[in-house]
Image (cartoon, rainbow, N blue to C red):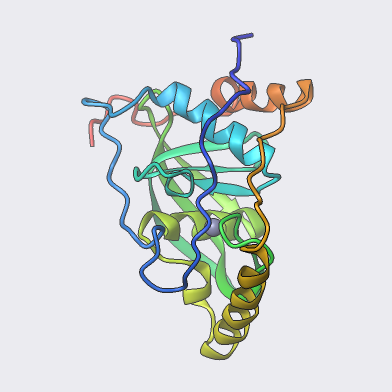
Length: 212
Ligand SMILES: [Zn+2]
C-alpha cells in the first residue's frame, strides 16, 4: 500500500455571508496536459479531508482550490475531475441537505433521483458512472459547488430565508468563539478507504484514449 499523508493542510472554507462569498466562484477545469498540481496527491488529500470532516461529499473550492474536482463518499469513494452531469432522470424530490461549509444549516432542496456523471479519474482516464438516491443528490450538490451555486440557492424562497436567518444568528454566537480545529488522523480503516479510492475505485474506464 502506498503511504498516505494524514497531515493535510487544507482548511474548510466557511463563508460568513450569504451573498458574494468565497464559494460563489466558478471553478476552472483541471488540465491534465498542464496540471496545476499533482492530481493523485490531491485526490488523496481531498478524500482524506472529506473523511476527517465526516462529509458525504467535498468540492475542491471548499478547501480553497478553485478547480473542477470533488470527492463523493460512495463505496468506494470516488474523486471526480472535470465532472459533467450527462443525464438526470427519475423523481425530482425534496430532502433536507447540509454542507460542510455551512455547519448546522439544513434546507430542503429538490434533486433528481438518477444521474449519469462523466468525469476523469486522477490518472486522466474518462469514465461514466451512474448514481442513484443519496449518492445522486450528493453529486448534484458537489457539481453545483463547481459552478459557484450553493445549496440554499436551490431551495424555495421560504425555506432559504428561514435557514439563512437561523444560520446568521448562529454565526454571531460562533464568532465569539475561536473555532480553529486541527484535523484528526484517519483510522487504519479510513486510510484503506482512501487507498481504495485511488486504486480500486475505478469503474471500468471507457474511451481511455479519448482526449476531450
Ligand atoms: Zn456543500
